[in-house]
Length: 481
Image (cartoon, rainbow, N blue to C red; front, side, top):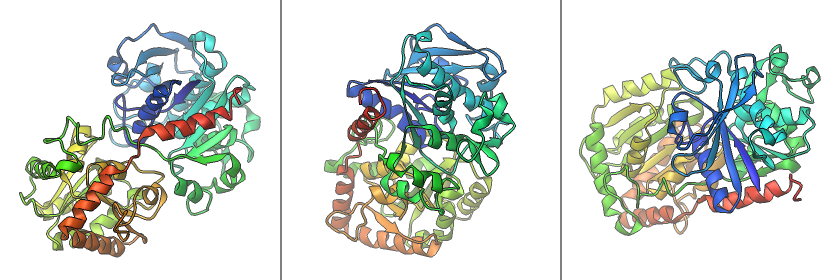
């Protein structure tokens, strides 16, 4: 089965969050099952240079009016999975991130940039002869790729099935409706039964409305987004498409996230030699300038500094961490400067006990998870979350809020036989603080803590079962059905 994954990022070519881990690992897992899975994403600066065996570029015209676009074929540098780059320098060759400049301001032409991504995917699916390969399924990921199934629908495609995955419904790709013509979208599509959402053109709605099948990345999140509290205006449409909506939990690529063979940590370890985890803790304390106290409970945050992640709750509960003699490492990208400044102030007020590390740093992320005792994920909502699954494999027990994929992947240690972490309910620092005290209390029972760590490390969130579930879903939208 030939599958084209359309996405805006894929590790290690470009990464801003967990989406990149998913779009790299899922195609590889599908290839391991004997499928022909390939990836299509924009040719950001430096990406082409990372690909081995780059082939001759194939022109696809100038669909967005920004200059000639081309498709460049290569292979992922770590896995060998085939990858296509949509190359259009006026749209993608610029300093900054994939979605915004260095100051965090979104690119003003993001509509054209990611419309081109969807257009190129639809072109490959509709006229595969231009590249010598034609997918049976186009699998689009999040709003940046969501126009691919829409273009195929407008072109009355009958050649391939379409699947759209909602990784985070909060980010919808909403733009002014006059762009409709610029993006080569038919005027009749701008209405309630199409692309229109509260007067705007919504890329995400296009994916939801025009794809044959929909998926979300955890069972709980699939239910949440059908409610007004989490649906961001699309709950009615999603409820009407409930029969076509499937929840498939994300997985973990244990080639990359395994303390037993992680090249980025100081001392490799497993459940059978957890004493080596303490070596990583001391090394992390030294690296980041924390007080060298192996017995201090070391908490960590790993992710984007945004309101969604609930990091303001951690600031409110910081007193609980410090009162129990704990330390905190906050690592993440500077999405919300106000949150970053608040953590910077906390680090200045508590030197040696609170550390802030800003920016995307994959090796440091591994060392933080290996050296910490407890991972904090107090999210207001969380479609799936990846770091709490990584943390469990590294024996770093998670504290999570009861929402989305967090509750689907963590079992509360009130169940002493099966627990792997701690769950709290309310979006309040007091509730998080109570959970922190509970975790520190259990940690004083060394036998119970080690058993919990070993259970967490034994959990299997591997991609094989997830890849099989997607394969079954693909069968329902192809001619093979």
